[in-house]
Image (cartoon, rainbow, N blue to C red; front, side):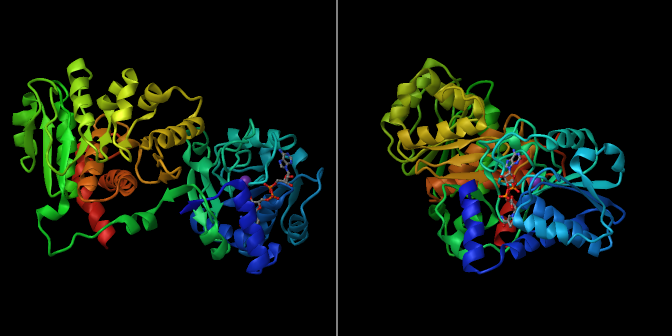
Length: 495
Ligand SMILES: NC(=O)C1=CN([C@@H]2O[C@H](COP(=O)(O)OP(=O)(O)OC[C@H]3O[C@@H](n4cnc5c(N)ncnc54)[C@H](O)[C@@H]3O)[C@@H](O)[C@H]2O)[C@H](O)CC1
Ligand SMILES: [K+]
């Protein structure tokens, strides 16, 4: 799904109004009616509502919502700012408020009017916020954030900007955000996403023509995207159709990492899986991944990486950071021209020997977590800046960078970014990255392009972790549980 920036979001509204055509007041009604349906379904039957309405169209949505909730016999109050002019559609909806709905001026608001059962609806600012929030809303937002009531924001939490670049210093902290028609970039970055709660995208019937034609560089890797990538396994096939995956790593004391990568590689469907590791990993490999072939790469550390003809390589889990390991990596890179995946220790080796990067085949995939990325390319003040730097580096070095995060960003050398939406905090543990390496390597072996392998691989990893939670908790989830759930992921896809 495309992610539009703030200017495109506005343009999409205007295009819809002009070309569908639809009156802007009716578009607002649609947004309010979808929000009303959501609240009726998701709030408790005994809950009452207080809706904080700004003076722009986000406030207009809130005022229309108040009328619709009242028509559904729900108790509702609204808070507005009479000290400022309302937008045209907000005025219309203010006039349509039934007499049974109390209207309170924001400067008279006190928290005393809020009961435990009150759901707070935030319709103060939407995508139109263009400076720091002034009074009376700053005081109101501080009060809202101090209450323990459920807070539902319309379109986005007031005070945040869709692109994450013009946030007010004060903003609402929501439990749920009802976003109109699109995801917004700000939902996916840790600094701002933490204030958005659960995201629900409501269909408000914006122009399909505009959406099809608008050119964007950011996307959500949603189910539809992934189903386009997934190639069902044909029945008339043999192991030669599904390629050779080679995972390389596992020095003494870190053999588990490469065994996890090898095990998942086989589970994801590579025709043949090779574990290229030092001898110290041999017997564990035989016991734990009997399906894989073992390639001796040294005694206690990686000394040389054997070339497997037509093999697709994932290098890094437990690779080690010694000079011997570095030389082995450099020698391999000098002789290899197809895209590979590099992770963990292999990436750390690059930070001290940046010139190694020039040997990495074009279109390869790097999978750093934020610290590895910072070590490699320099520190950034926040995740928005880190993403910009990743885009620059991906383009400069013609590589794809998988920035691992709660919403991992797949940054392609073409300038496109895909945000992943599967996964949970159970993955925030040692071993998770090794599993991701194995998954992506297996997909490369099965002739998914590096772009497809990175997007699909990150999605599979998160989805397997989500499905594994049925029998585990986020605390107890192990990387091995993620591997065992891979089967459920493919069953989900082929349904
Ligand atoms: N996307 C859709 O399909 C629909 C969206 N709608 C809603 O409209 C808002 C955007 O409305 P807009 O009037 O442009 O902006 P806001 O409501 O966010 O309010 C901004 C409003 O206030 C002024 N302003 C901006 N910053 C400040 C500030 N810091 N202090 C005071 N005043 C400020 C600004 O000039 C505007 O007038 C969108 O998010 C949706 O909720 C429609 O309902 C149609 C469907
Ligand atoms: K809002």
